[in-house]
Length: 378
Image 1 (cartoon, rainbow, N blue to C red):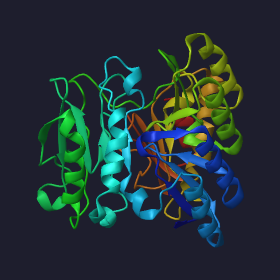
Image 2 (spheres, rainbow, N blue to C red):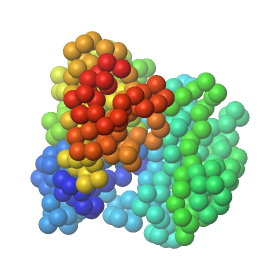
Image 3 (cartoon, rainbow, N blue to C red):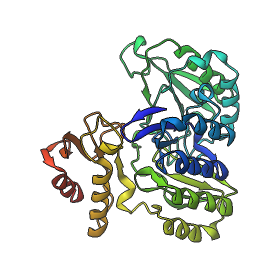
């Protein structure tokens, strides 16, 4: 558990973003019982609980292990695996979901990996409409032009320029699990760095909004800013039990996909999720806004990033604005978003922001209300 301004922060690894309704309900119950009641979906398709009381850490850990949500600290450290959320649901993607189980088993069977850096992670990308282009991880695997052949690359600062993929390797899909485990073992004792998952094609770009609405065999939704209260978690879990066989997939866009949804049920499911407070429309201005925890949750933050992001969303909705990419950060570290967005508010002083838009600095050290107005109109 990590100490933060609003109490303890607990990260819950969800390998591949795959989680069942019962496990999601267990997380929501834990958040209410021992934390603030808020469950965050992260940019690595994991979960976070905030405001956890220090004296509750042991009870929380026991409950999460008992519910099958956590395998304990060593196991969870090995299981930081990011997998594209559609996979088998996207005809343009290579379905790598069947490799997740064998990969986790191979990682669990390698005792040397107890020494992994806690932020070590894999990104295993099948490509397609919602692939992982632009996402960063210590080890990345991406499809090549040859079906069934994957490109694996990994890098650490010791090996050369930080962040450069200095060890690319082409492997057959049948060899991918072994190659990923080998890369993890090879990382031990090195200074951590990361590489970006390359775009699947020259014209593809990293998306800001994830899969929302109804697709072929799936329905996507997200809590605003990826922060769900217990009621929204219950809505998702209940919907999954009724409509998708109790299965959910977390996305790195801080949302959720319900797979295996019958086409004649998708409309009713969307209304159910919308009524539960979730964003289900890619045209909603909330779909492209990202914010860090801000001064309410982080001692480094200088501004109420979450509150100001919600004010921008409300203003854009009232004006009927189209979605526009926005990152609201409480300080210059800009933790919540890996790549620059069209508009970024960066906390520069108590309640003040520098506003970046159009590729440059638009306004310096303006009050929060002014920054919100600028972002709402961008």
